[in-house]
Amino acid sequence: MKLDDEQLAMQRGAAGPAAQWAIGQQIEVGRFFGAERLIPVGSVLAGAEIGITGLSGLALLEKLAGDGARVRVPSLTGACSLDFDRWSEFRLPIAQYAAERRLHDALRRMGFIDTSTCINYQSVTPPRFREHLAWGDTGAVAFANSTAGARSNYEGGPASIAAALTGLVPEYGFHLRRHRFASRLYEVSTPLRGTSDWSALGAWIGADVMDYRTVPAVLLHDSAPSIDELKHCLAAAASFGSLAMMHLIGATPEAPTPEAAFGDTPVPVPRRIDRAAIDGVYQGFAGEGGKVDLVVFSAPQLSLQEAADIVERLRGRHVAADTRLIVTVNHQVQAEFERLGYARRLAESGGELLAGTCFYVMAPALVREQFGFRHLVTPSCKLANILGGAGYRPALRSVDECVDAAVTGVLP
Image (cartoon, rainbow, N blue to C red; front, side, top):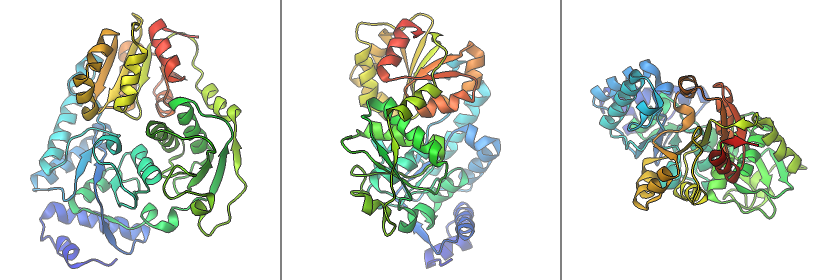
């Protein structure tokens, strides 16, 4: 691997032991993937919750902070495993709170901006076309690659920390143009209505592809997805198929036409996705009907528009006594949500706002055991997919149906 003079000096320890460790990590990763060089990144999004790092990762981060580690590029923290202000209301262990606090304290000492968000692209660091990034959240990576035409691999765990301390990543995978062309084509032949339909589309394609390196292209015809709809589609594709990139023909920058999406490869005959296919995703998360324990809007965190829309749909209504309605946002959305009076109105309607976390990383199995939760309704395929493994019986419904379920306490 070719290193420039500054990188060689960092390798020798001229920038301190933390940077020396970090560039050593990047060099080894690059060699493993056959990268020819290290390239600078515009920003970093690090997975920063104790369930990912564990106690060994926490010890490493505290050591790096103690060794004087400092970030070299704008570096943010992803969603963490609890709301620091409301963790005890969900009966989470104090040991989890203490470890999470130590983790974020160490990252702040290194210069991380402690955003605790998985939607940094909507509120803090919007990606730009062809910008190289080192992002760790899977949905954020899929969004950056697909919607903005930025370039990032999944940078989990120590890799994202090493990228922050060096400002560099190995040039392999989705940083290289040749790996960004499509190899499968789908055609959506049915109108898509709302974020749950777009989430179902991402889930269907992700489950059909099931390969990180494969890039699907999608013909949408008359559909014009919003940013929030794209967000949910791509998060679901990442959850169900580990997809890091998708071309939506005419809606994403590297795919104005099918020919552009496929490059020098002939455009294949598309596989059709009709209403029956979308409905099949809903049927896979049909729920069991009857009493609803939880209605959760999460995974990814909601934008200000999404959260405000839920409040408007609750106008004049109240969440049922034995049901909980939970909305998760980042701290940037929370501040505006409170300033504009939406937080007060949500609380008056019986809803709950959590900031800095996503429900699926909030020790969901433990929360279920503590409260006896079972039946959960959500418009997010990503959340339904993950929480099925935590013992919940998730039902996928539209946003309107979710709000109705919260108010009536019953799923038809």
